[in-house]
Image (cartoon, rainbow, N blue to C red; front, side):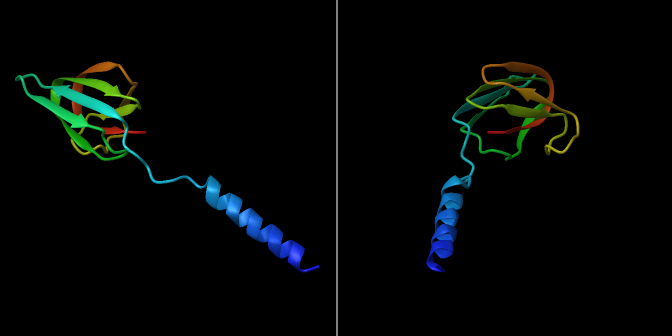
Length: 102
């Protein structure tokens, strides 16, 4: 009689292991930044939640990844004001930093 609860517990733990999320992976694609003085920066396959610096005012960010990118006004991705940029979109303005979400 004790074997049945033990077998159910083992089976349930196996299901939990299979359903747990794996490590975060990069958002496939490229994010390009164009600064006001002709600067160009390219980030290939940005890792989720890694902070990348922008050029500040009068910057264009082009999201050519498969995931959403958050744009921040400060240079360390800490401002509470952020702007989501969907795949394929371009954002102009004060781009101090950005990070990929997925």
